Amino acid sequence: MEGKRSTPKPSDLLYKIRDFSRSILVDICNGRSPVVSINKFRTYCTNSAENCLCSSNLPVGTEVLTLRRQPHAHRIDVLLRVLLIVQKLLQENKHASKRDIYYTYPSLFSDQSIVDRAINDICILLECSRHNLNVVSVAKGLVMGWIRFSEDGKKFDCITNPNIAQPVPVQAEDVQDILSFAEYILVVEKESVFQRLVNDKFCSHNRCIVITGRGYPDVPTRRFLRLLTEKLHVPIYCLVDSDPYGFDILATYRFGSLEMAYDVEFLCVPDICWLGVFTSDYENYAFPSQCLLPLTTEDKKKIEALLHRCYLQHEEPHWRLELERMQDKGVKFEVEALSVHSLSFLSKEYLPSKIQCMSQMSRLMSF
Image 1 (cartoon, rainbow, N blue to C red):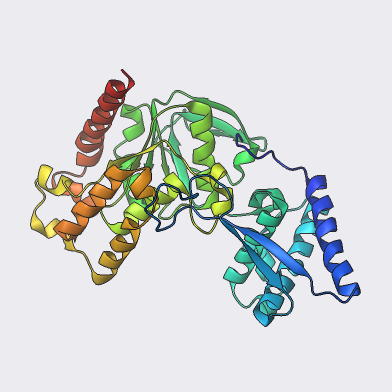
Image 2: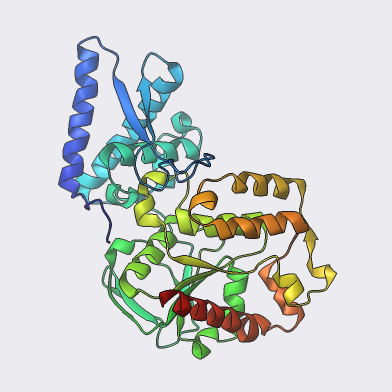
């Protein structure tokens, strides 16, 4: 995959692991407390000034761990144990899931999040992505439409029947021989909306690729989408619910997640366009009041927190305006609310009109 950072070889990573482990051992043997410095990254902050570094992919600070502090000592212990597992995976050319790793020392790790943090720490220390460590996820995303590709020798042909869902590949790095006649990529938030498009044979009437992460997208879905944008160079649209959590999912595709900010250049999709649904849609499409839900206290807090993110000030100010409209109206609704007009209203009316409008705007901006 393309990106600023080169893909490290297993031998390079093993060399770094050996050097890191040796430095820890030398410090202990010489009576010194080992110090582990881990760079900190972020995808957003609450600084409204223009000089924040969140969009630069650069570290924004360093976290220093030392054995002199008990919480740090436990974190270093976990890090070294996970590093030992990773070393073995690389040496034997085997793969394991995060859950597999957790069950090697469940009493020590106590919670999956402890392992997740250790894996992220190792990626930062070794300057690599999680898949480079041979740590894999079970992909939950789905794809259909006008695309054909192979993954590790296995062929996936969506073109033959573009309305049959296929699983998103686990390892985007193993994807080869991509062939597509798609004019655009449509990302939908939920599986229920994806299935609506399957039932309506949306891809038979529209030359496109449809992807869903089934809620918050996992790493394989985001890496696969990033790969497609780099290879196909077609517009990417995103359809999410008109609520703060739908917006947060959109932002995860666009800017990446805070947890994996160190790897954002391989996970984010900077050119993704917000297609809908918008707060104004319930008036434009004459929704009955029964389709609308009042924002909860939790929703309002979520919107307030989202509005403070720096990228809504600097990079996507029109997204901020949409969030403010949602906040002002005090209501939310799901994509499925469009079915109040007819079950196929989404696929036959809403999406084609929205995509046509976006396409016209894009052509005007290119002049």
